[in-house]
Image (tube, rainbow, N blue to C red):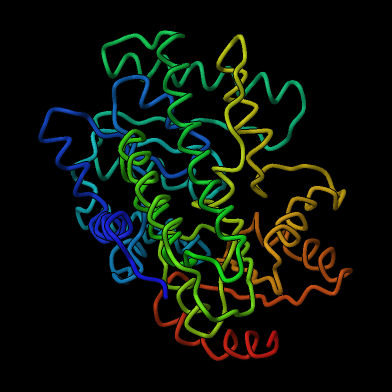
Length: 376
């Protein structure tokens, strides 16, 4: 019997009240920097003495204002995030950082700065390939980002301080990977919905506080008795997901979501920042080379998907669900190749498109239920 306990209860509280801790820190004199993608490394924000805060949308609050500013083919997630900002949800943010991960995120940067008037704004340019010149370009961008943060914070980021912050975040990554490893058990001692709530909550907390929460949750999950029921084991791959609703829909249909390949999931925690003589080389290695996001071209060799097959093997996955937001070009370009690659091994696949609304989730429920039934 799986029973929620203190750490997971705390994670759920943060998940449902994401800005509460950031607002408390702001009242205590801290400055909060909101960011929309991990390609602007939160390590640099933390090392500057600022508090990074992952901006998320609100699946439960339909878009009512942002449509006036965007064309109809805009990413629904970015549209929702901007809609929340127009409604005042991000008024506690002192700064706003985006990285050129996709055209929709780049498009919102100017609108956000113009209509929300943050004290600090920054666009981190991110190359779309892994050539040596691209790696050097990204390193220079991160150095420029560091210098701009120093100017805003009024303090210098020393190499030693940056190394200490990197170690803090690497501890964070190791703790998250440890929880994923526990979910290799059959049945897993922790649900996919619990994991999603925990990771979204952690993205809204300072790294040290998230590490404390992760240690509590790990101890609790290790102490759980395994559930009696084995179910089909699912891997979810795809676009940004910052609510548990889709994962919960799958699990309520009779499956275990045991692993994912999404942004607030394994992607950002799979690899540490390596210890390099120049810490910026380590950041480039982690965030550009090792962070496997389809927005970065890695050639057309399907070997770029080998890590997905490793997840399928290690987590004993029975089926894969592709989750693609409407107009998410990076993922939609990759999914056909990945689908063919997995189909070679006879891996069952379900493809779902979503518009980041609760109404759409209700509409796809029958398809998810049929897929789970097929897996047996």
